[in-house]
Amino acid sequence: MTWKIFLSILLTSALAVITAIFLTYSYGNNIKELFGIFFYIIIIICAAAVILSKNIVKPVRNIDLDHPKPKKTYKELFPVLERLRLQNGKVNRQHTEIMNSREQFSSITENMKEGIIIADSKTAILASNSGAYRLLGINPLEKGQSIYNLSRKDIFRRCIQDAMGGRNAECLLKTEIGDRKIIASPASVSETVNGIVVFILDVTEQQKLETMRREFTSNVSHELKTPLTTIYGIADMIANGIVKPEDSQSFGKDICNEAGRLISLIDDIVSLSKLDENSIEKQDETVDLYNLSDEIIRRLSKNAEEKNVSSAISGEHISVTGNRTILDEVIYNLCDNAIKYNVDGGKFEVKISHIPTKAIVTVSDTGTGIPEEHLERIFERFYRVDKSHSSKIKGTGLGLSIVKHGVSYHGGTVRAVSSEKGSAFIVELPVLT
Image 1: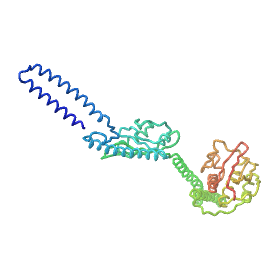
Image 2: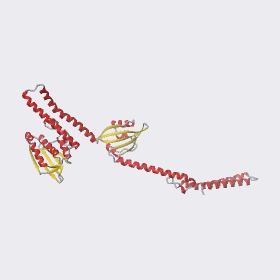
Image 3: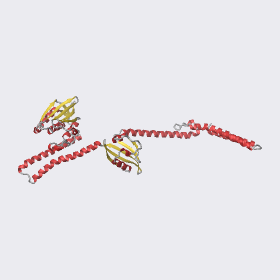
Image 4: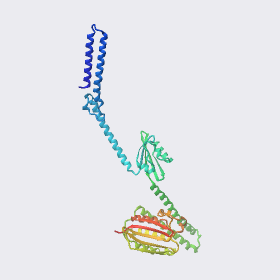
């Protein structure tokens, strides 16, 4: 029996009792007694209504709104509870989809090398990945904090402000741990900026390469300009008849020397470019490093005699698979430097050895040595340890850079060690298997 039936019976009974009493007492009985009886009846009816209402409402209160069961309650509530059940199912599915999307977003962004930060129109951080804080070298910020707390530098602040103003913005932010490129883009709807998305990229290596490119261009221009200026000056003197006939041979020799210097520089630049671009055709062959080194020493014997430097070779015949021309340039440049940067009456030696997986070529000299602070940079293009004496020593300044790239081409490594008694360059190459 439902609560409607209970309520109908109660009301009907109450009306019947009241009507009967009223008719009985309305003829000659005391009206005061009539109202007294009526009052007690009303109290009994209210008490019964309270008891019945508790029993009626109790099942309604016990309904589980998260998991409603329409069949286990009053049939009058069935449509409402069924609608609630269907709505809960829809909400749960949407919640699951949202959680899956968040997990996917988190999984993707956390595996990114780049940093990403999303902020609302009031600059409060809504989402971010750990990469952003790692690249900036700061501790993670809690959601809701201002994106301006990522960096106090003006260039960063201006970049964010531009994005908040509806413009795409980029800036280069220099930090203690490297250079970072900041890309900030507004998220707009109907020309209203609702927030911004900020990407943080590590461009330290890119900036380093760009600096090297500018330095290389500057150095090449200088190295080309010097001999060309000399050649132009001599040619201008000859063209204007200033050179005496007896001096023509001397000036002609100067022109040849400077032209040779230009050719060497251009050859080195071409070789370095090919190694950089890995555009050298594969011409792998078996190369005996001992025989190759011995041949190079003989080719440089005249240079060694002019500098009063003696040479020696030791070790064993070790073969590698590689490009003979490039290996020749590697060993030649090391031996040539060992002569040029040696002392009068000094000595240099080439030693060929090996360990189970590598062939080792060691070129040592008795020169003045290389200061420790320069050892990491000597393989850079045009880098000179003593720039004040660079003009006195013949060379393009690209020799050790060619050595480094040539060794890398063969999958090997090169390093330098030095002391006051001289320097040694150790090249390790994969052995022939």
